[in-house]
Image (tube, rainbow, N blue to C red; front, side):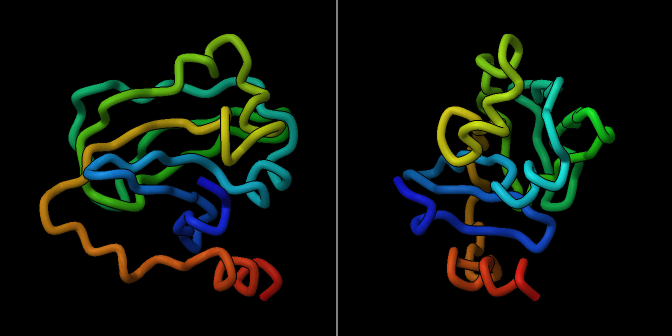
Length: 125
């Protein structure tokens, strides 16, 4: 799945949906703004989140930032590869640098999110 198949938020998170599971991460723009990622707190599997809840925190050489859940769901997995190599968020934000997977809540409406073209226009703003 390429960047064109993803959905984006105004706060620079991306997600892709396969079945009832969404894979989430930081956009390339966001990781570039943060600088070198040095730590990602893995979200706890089994925790239920409402849209807008803090999913996890990401620490860069510049700051510590909260990553918000764009959708309601249950965390099913955190990317364990980030424990050993958090820089994957920088080097491959749309691939190996994903952060979490959420099982979508029933009836999740995805129509409010931007596609890749709309997101590009948003960041050029």
